[in-house]
Length: 292
Length: 257
Picture 1: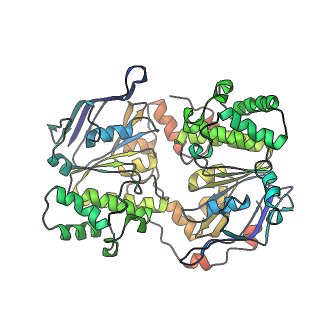
Picture 2: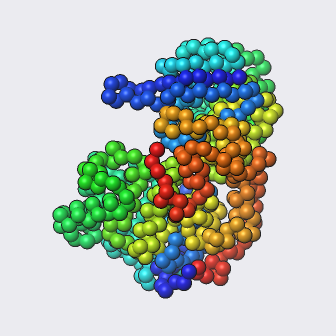
Picture 3: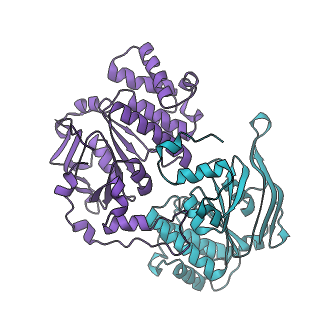
């Protein structure tokens, strides 16, 4: 993939959570960049993948210490922005889909109101225009009866529909980058793929960038263009999705090998043997910053 | 070993009535591992809850070892059949140590030699003795699931019901727990009934499995059929395709069942 412009550039990102038992270094010296492509961040729980995603939008609790040489979005330095300026970026330029629609939607407002609010705030539109756009957007995420769904409350929709509503809400201000943090982990496999297909179509139609955070290596490799593999707050390696199975990094190999396969035999699954040396090895610099 | 025929259960009344399990029948031989696969809401966990006695307004026949069980179970039943839940965080008492958690079933069933048994079962699930007096919050997810397995094993049951035992765990930890379950089954000649939404896990663990959709059984397949993709029902085929990863073209062909 040839990139005309860099959408997001992150250089030497560090995130530290202070705690009574000493600082927890959740993310260590991470650098990556992306253009209009789908990039996946994969890792086990505690590897720092979600924290990385949230730090871009500064959605971490105030006691978290974020430092970086550079977090720039379309050439604008996100670190130097005030909270007020940041609010213009969130939603309008960079938006985020969270894991569970049950906890991310407001339970006492109708779905339609919530989606149109996102449009009114960022586009200074009238209520009527916002409603029209919302209905169009609901149709775009393949909800068959948008008029009816517009009036529903979040508890009245299924998990798959809830996640499609979240995607509609996040895409309606027309952002240029979408961060999706495990958007489909709570869904059934078939629904998961249908939601991903919608995300895929919309992202490519609108020429957006996508950061897809997930623990499912196989899914990410079939969905994204490039994959960042994280372990213990460090980037282990960055691979092109197509070359994932050729990867030689011991951690990536370990993750791939411990998956049971439908067509596989019944011999013991190999387990992941962790090596502390991975955390100290130098994976920063050239190989990581090279784009696509 | 386990023989289920025409199992039915419904929740709610009148127009709200939800027929959650419709005429499910299957047999599991001693030492066999049987899988139940389906999407959420297909009734697979409900079947398990009926067998284990957590739900008692079901209709049909459940036979364990040839003996029909009634709605109300006796102590002897629970010695024979044990259940491991999906979420290791929710299924252990947060204010009981592992030691206390493991001793409770032993006390209920009047076992002797309690200390020795706890030691032995912890060894069996590969947890060192240093974990014995810890609380659940001091353990990782994988270790907690090992404790849940240990709690089921400690009564020396013959049938273990597994309700998505690894879906809350990372893939690397999942492999360890699946290996553990396979080893224990071989060692003790246990019978498993395992619920999962993951075809790969079922294909690895089970010899036969039932595919469920909206409370009804869609088809009964063997692991061999599953491995070779030799499926007859469209629902199962779609599930199979979906498990293979993201394929834009295939998704457009998906139907609602």
